[in-house]
Each structure stands twice: as C-alpha cells, then as structure tokens.
Length: 339
Image (cartoon, rainbow, N blue to C red):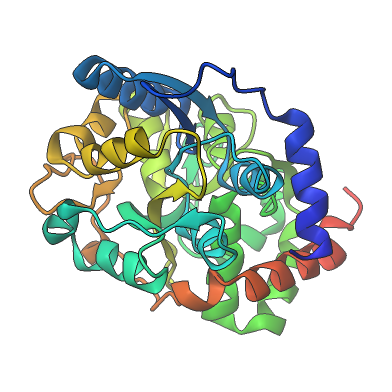
C-alpha cells in the first residue's frame, strides 16, 4: 500500500463504526456508496426478501475504499455496493476484494462484464452513467454553459462546485476524464484555471448539484443522472453533457476479501444483479442505467448513446499506481491552491 493509501486508511478507520460481534451468520455488513435513499431501499428489500439482517453504512467511494484498506487485516464488511468503478478496480488489484463469478453474469451488459473481466472477477458493473454538470436556470439566465471550456468563464467566479477527488469517485472520474480528453498537462492547466471559479470542493460527489438546486451555487459538476434527479423533484436544474466529450462511470459491486459473512455476501451479490433489485434505483430517484439487460431503464435516465463519450480506459485509471499518482498530483497542484 502506498504512503498516501495508509494515511487515507488511518483516517477511515478512525471514522469506521464498530461492527458488533453478532454480525455473523444470518447478517450482512454492507458498505454502500450511492445516495442514502437508494442504500436504504436496497438494504430493506434484501432483508425483507431473505430474512438476512443488513447492517448498512453509507460513505462515498473514496472513503469506502480507504475504510476497506484500513480494515484489510481484520475485515468488518462483507459487500461494497455502488460507487464509481475506479476505486473498486484499485481494491481488486490490491487484493482487498475476492473473486466471485455469479450465475447472473450471463444477463449483464457488455460494459458490466468488461468491468468483471478487467478485475479478474473481483468486481462487477451494476449501473452506468455519464459525467457532466447541471446549472440553476434561476441563476444562469443567459448564454448557458454547454462545454467544459464554458465553466472557466469569469461570470462563474466562486459559483461552481465539484467534489474532492480523494473522497469522491465522481470527481476522480472527472480528473481521469479530463486527462484522457485533453492530455495530462492541459488537463491540469484547465483545473488550475477552474479553481478560480470553485467555491467549494465537497466531500460527496452529488453534493454540488444539491447545492445548485437550492441556489447555493450556480453550477454543480456531477454525473448527469444526479442532475436529472434534482430536476425530477422540481428543482430548476438543466443537465449538460459537455460538448467536447466526457467520461462515464461503471458503478460497481465487490465482495470484501475475508468478510465475516461470505454466504450472505454471495447471496446479496446474486440478488443485486437481478432486474427486480436493480429497478429499485428508480424508486429512490436514481436514474443510472442498470447493468442487467432485462432491467427496465428509467425513462428519465440520460442515455449513453446520446452523449459524446470518450473511450474511457477503466483498466489504467482504475489501477492503484495511476489512481494514486493522479490524486497526489491533484493534491500538490490543485488541492494546495488558496481559496
């Protein structure tokens, strides 16, 4: 583990709730990295259908990766469900998650299977969604932003929010996307300029669009389905797929190596890949594209075929070495800038 990973892990273990000794047998310890409402819907449905008691903790992707790394000597969790695929791939590479080949694999989309194959079947794709941003139409009334370049406009000074890529898989996806789209030097030049318009680097990836929905900021950089979720609830948010092109996530699921309840973990894994389980997302105002080909995609979900997607290199940018290197550079060159 790198020095940086150790520091993150140490921070996570101080925050980690103790899992009771009773969390064995007919129980499942679930680490969840989507929004709270979807986490609860999954936990409650699985518990209701199987009788297995679920102990669920919700944290962002980066925080959950750090917690699992911190607990690797004595794992407390069984399944990590949701969140961007890059930290799941890093966890797989570092042996923090274990191989499992579900019988449900035959029903999955090609991009979900590719995630499994890339990781040696230590993780699997459960949903997909494109990266973009949303703006508040009450605050942006003329010349709305349509491209990454537009976010550098001086009129948006201190009026853009994005998450910190150390804690947020959404923001790391943005970092990796810009590097692939522009080239690394140009991407960091862009991020340096964008910093002048950033009012806050949030901990959660979806927090920026919630802030935009309430008028706290004009623009939130998020996955497009998170922006759509605000629009559906009546917020004055318009969702944008950047004109230059953009990346996307393959939200993933992994079984934690050495977890206390392996049978319950495999049962949840199989269940979470079924159409019925995947369609719970829409009931929690989550509009990602599900990975099971038989799942109904929510009508409001942004379609990937309508977005100018880059050929995102999940294997490279999900690797421990590259992810650690890019985050260290972000810390040194962007995170250290005064606000």
